[in-house]
Length: 277
Picture 1 (cartoon, rainbow, N blue to C red):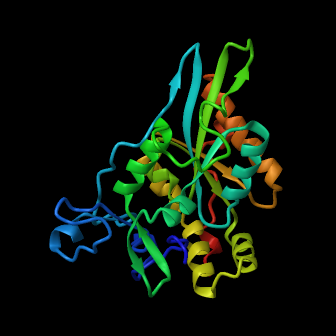
Picture 2: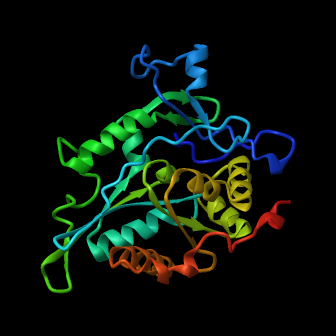
């Protein structure tokens, strides 16, 4: 079963960007965990992201960003359409930098942090309230199951003069931009993305849905709506080591206060709308 790993675009015009598959249901106060609410109130609590006719004010993002002489702590979201290389990049950074990575999709499935199962699409609907509560527990180190190799403190790496530690936590998921206020969006040219997803065994429908979502910048647009800082990295035709190097550079520059040197990762330079058949 997948965790909303594809995007269903409903509507006649692509320009309307009426996105309905990626839905996050906030559990109403009178609804028990795991229960599917069928009331009008629950319907109003659904966040139909990407639908301009039904705007949803974003909830405050989780953040542990704190630059100080003693510690360098940062929560980073690594997001992107399925197939853009998020997991591969995260594993490389986890190995070479010792940064903590929370693989959010795995966490949601393993701990049942979802509100319902979509049998028709073989997917689950993520419960963002449960997810935020669980992540808060993990980040605070209180009864949290460690989904990375080390705790944030253990993953701290001494820098420079040896008096500073960098405690980096990466949230890896195509949902990460709903969690963090700083996000890096991985991108891939849609025809190349299609080939990657076909190799994964995705159905033709899901391959096309994801390629189309990538072509019209769905996740990038959502990141702009939800996050304070957004960076974009093109993974097309590149090795995972190259992409990981770019992500590492962005994080290092943020930690050192050199964000003004990251202009090459400013969003908006990729235009793949013509790749839609």
